Image (tube, rainbow, N blue to C red; front, top):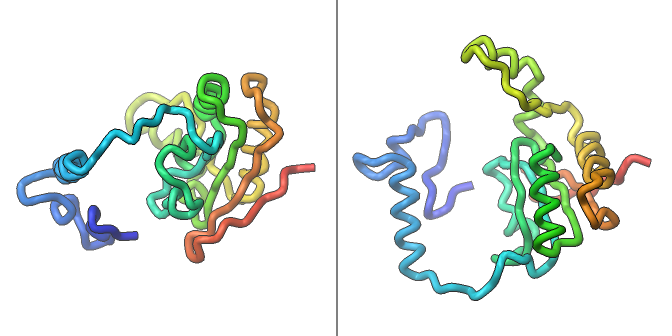
Length: 187
């Protein structure tokens, strides 16, 4: 997806193509922030999401969660990582979201054609060979998005740290149609 703030990425593009003359991509983003701040006015809200929902999703750049879900600034907490997998750090964020900031519902979103479907735990071994240290984290690669959504729902439902586990729903977002497909939890 390309917007006015971004140059289309493709095989022929480089960091220099996406950055202002003589600057980096980060320089371009900081410049965009300056323009944003010039028009910004404090919306007067706090960190508690209006809809009392936390969305856990993949970090994939093709997912415009606010657009896809009809969300506005302040509606939800958004927690993103590679694959949208429920890891210990996601449980940490959900626990804070629920216990300190009032969320009650959790939506989990994986997507079609995820990069994690092409990785394996061998990725960790490759990193160890390259840098001389094995990561302590798991890759959490998967070959079946539906099953991984079910596993993530189960991790949320069984966490002893979460107060609200009755409204947990999981979906797979189709990156070619923009539609969500709901996944039923394991029975």
